[in-house]
Image (tube, rainbow, N blue to C red; front, side, top):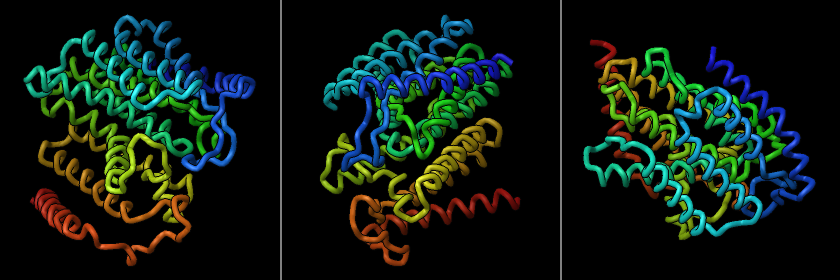
Length: 372
């Protein structure tokens, strides 16, 4: 019941605040105009993150969970403030990265250590990369209507399920605030799904990324599940923003472009280039995010052999999707029609053959497991 109340409260507060936030943004011209590196074609308010942060903070304060998870809220709040500052007056990418670094360092200084490898310096480096990487990953994922909010809502839902299983039915303060987080993102998604009437802006994407990254570390330090590495489940829950970040970084690196510049070359844009439309492209990525959450639950509930085989299958499926989409230009990047699968180039054929070998081996293992 506390989780349900937190979810409903977050949903209703956000759904009620979004129209007000939209009017304020239009009044003070806090909007994103159309441009060559943007997906939308009209002027859209861009401070929707405010309508998500306030309900989340209110639930944390009045539910009694704040005393337990204040570190998570502090990190998310600082990331949110940085993003809002960028929405009001654009901040250089190097400056944002520097401030993100300071926030991550402060979080790691205040939070009890998380044992990942057993080597403190390496653990700190990995935790630092996780905070900065997930924050920027959600920021990059906010490239088409409803994508970042929907994927975050799905990740948060499975996060609550993992907390309930791991905590034997008592998710604690983190579970309550995570349920509120799901309600907040779902309430915002009502207005942000295509066609979006408001954007979350950098304030919203930094809030979602900072919150999820900090919550994952917070839960890992007190996890009672010892059958799987503490990093495996959070990575699976957030593998779609990780996948999109890696995909865009590699694609732009091969093209000689900076990964920090905006563009219409994300996985969602390439799915649209296949002709499936914006909504279906987002729904495909929702489905992949849901599959990642299901595989994460499998690590807890299934036998180790089958669970890790499913992890391998899911990871290879994403790699194959990435290889396929890597051959497809965004429909808005070029004037040519998207190529048919039979017309794709064979520049990376060797990697595809190696992937086929791995997939065959995994299929044989799963077949043997199912039969015997």
